[in-house]
Amino acid sequence: MIYGKVESYDNNKGTGLITPEAGGKGLPFNRSAFSWTDKSAPSVGRRLSYEVAEDAGVTSAIKLHHA
Image 1: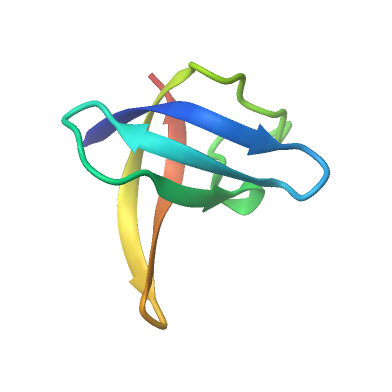
Image 2: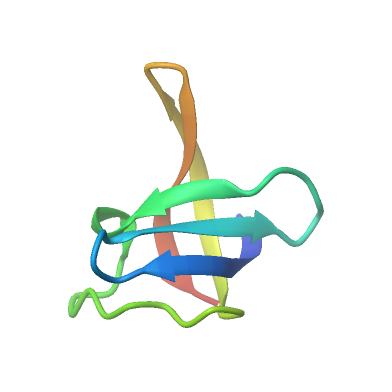
């Protein structure tokens, strides 16, 4: 499992950026990747666990969970 912190989140677009705790490039994520049912926005600085996926050459964070 990978852990990171939310760097930004745009509630209107439903997209954000998470930076891995181990360092490295931030990854984009989409509201559809939230594991929690109410789809509430994660606050900036919130620690989350996630998986990484690549689709059409774009790497993103998926299966986000509150850590």
